[in-house]
Length: 315
Image (cartoon, rainbow, N blue to C red; front, side):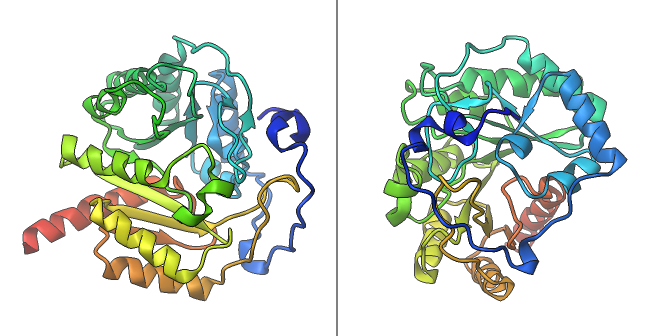
């Protein structure tokens, strides 16, 4: 993770007034990573010169996941072309793509012995295809080195990419196609200003049209200023787009310059969201304060497959 101070990592936020950061409740706190497994995973990633969203986005679960040898690889560099108000990934002008990166990712997956791997990226609006071919090359490299591993991609929205970008990724046959809606549509202008809610929703719907057998997944954060009805409406929108798996987690403010935490949603409220999501027909639901898009992704994928088999058997 870059050691640059927030004002340099996030130049688009430098002019913003500091936002108060409320004290975290007991249910959101995690222990600092100290295990040998954490250190081993960190060393493998460093040796292969790989970035992870675990570090770049400041995920609170990094200690737990890395101690188990799980990491979410972030391809195409550490600098994003967008500046979402919630995100801790650095904003600026990215470097050229590294043609050897897909091979290094595949090598790390094999070395870590990952049964399920999550590949994400920064937004690359500077590239004609938004980085779609780089995703496809990474998927193919992992298939070659670790044919038994299942692959989940967490992609950008390809909003400014040339036609065919989405098709390029889908044709590489990841097992799960994930793209996060992040929040309710009414908060997009302040939370995700470079994106469009219905374009992201349509992207996920299009995946199913291209390959009905591919699992689709999306997630949102709560505590940004949304209300319960807004979250339930997002669930309905996701199901209308035939999305299989929803994740819901608490938003945590990376620095005082980022979007403020409106409130900490209680575990009881998360349980209510989980119950509602199951009732709306999702195959898989993860809704807890510490849920993140890739948290327990391997275990959840196994349950996702079983849920589809059970539903087909009962059809």
